[in-house]
Image (cartoon, rainbow, N blue to C red; front, top):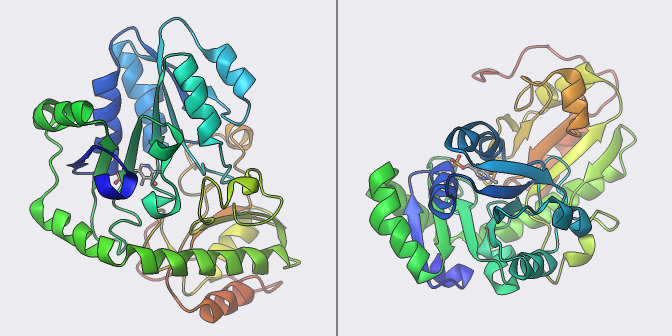
Length: 336
Ligand SMILES: *Cc1c(COP(=O)(O)O)cnc(C)c1O
């Protein structure tokens, strides 16, 4: 992973969240403040907003596409910025060169969660970012059967993570899971080619479909940040979000009507997955708070897998047919 990310060293953890928490608990002290991107992965969000404040670490959520607003949010005790790009829910892309430069100018450490891209599509360290981390649960492993995390960066920090933090907090990766990830990495390049090609085809198909209100995919022209494709990112990745025409019930019917896509919240698996944030990841939010967070009732996220693209498009087409009758029940074997 160090070689792939262009880092001096890398350390493995028992989960992506173990990697995120190890980095934040190593680099931050009581009394510090950090800036985080809006829309961060759910557990990273609650780590920053619920757990760290218990240890006297404050945060501000910012939009990293508005760098003047980011600068305004910097306080004397701000130490670090944490972001993902692309970021949920609309797969907004942030300019890593500009963010790394801003962080340097203000003596802040910069941390990027590169899970959605992998080092094959995006190498944040080469843009001046200090630390990169991954949930290896996703594309790096690639088969939806391992939970793991990785941190990449300077040797000194990695030695601390390896020798003290991981030991004391205990989130050690099991040897068997490490082996499964090494096996997954052998096919990462060919898998990503398929994920990206399928996702682009799906995004284009959805954009042209009368039942779809909006499509969010970094590889589509006109998407916020799509000009960074080819510079910062080699391709748009495997995740596509869409807003359907209709209402909450129509979005549920669409998700239930898909036959190839499994109803689940992960990404980076061989199988395509679908999730409806309003009824799944963001169901604890009040409807109004959900809307403020940009999660409409008809927002659906697709994590595109390795299936034949014709099968994916046919499945989407049948699920989008008007007046299709939903059973109302999740597919067999699924837990909501
Ligand atoms: C899944 C995910 C995580 C957390 O990873 P786990 O391995 O499930 O703990 C962190 N960041 C992003 C962007 C993720 O998608």
